[in-house]
Length: 292
Image 1 (spheres, rainbow, N blue to C red):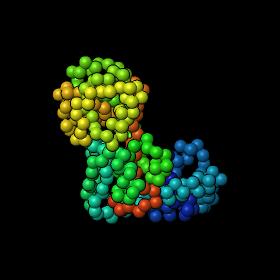
Image 2 (image 1 turned 135 degrees about the vertical axis):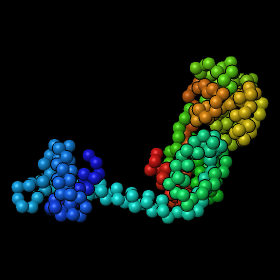
Image 3 (image 1 turned 45 degrees about the vertical axis):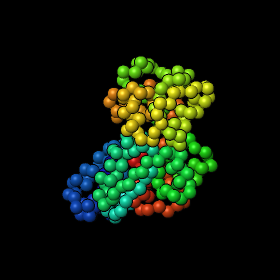
Image 4 (image 1 turned 60 degrees about the vertical axis):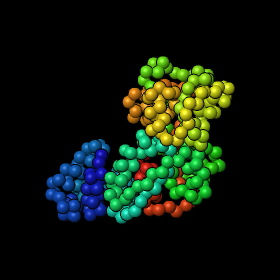
């Protein structure tokens, strides 16, 4: 069943005439009749009583007509809303997110949105999820990417659209001795050289929690919030790091191995609940909810 057949059926039902429906729809009358007949065949039901001079809906036809009108109305409203957003917006979309999401996830996702809205530009700032959540709650940011593992009372204050969920992996150079492993135990990180994010990034905080739980102390050779530097150091063999599947998939020469315990990272696009934000930012949030 497709929307075009439903529209043709609803028009015939509303006008009580195949010929008048054909005129309104700018179609040939036989094409209208064929479309309705195919719809009846798909459903295995007679929708019209054609025995009189005017066609009349059967009981099943009346029920379908009510539902068809509701469906077509919803579709028209969606087209109106998103059509308006495509044509009306000018200005700048602003979003803050951790660098790994900005580097490996946002280009395609945000690029698709901007492609639909040529009047918009975008400004993406790098910030750890902990800082993003705090600034959203304090009203310093309109839109940002957060971790879903925050405090429940804080998350309840945010309107959130789930963005991605991935396991946290140990990433290493392809020539690293662990590169062929199926899994790495946290205890094996004790004394092992690592290059990691600074504190305040959820993925670093997650590593710290896992290590504290088992009294493990890696050798932190370098700490930086500059992702390209961490990636380069990993490829050169300075140490391992923690990351997501999107990072390993986007970086030739890097291998990712699961950590024991199956730690995961869930990310959402968020704004403070009840806060009015720019039309561009609100449109991006609505679009993300519609796409995902």
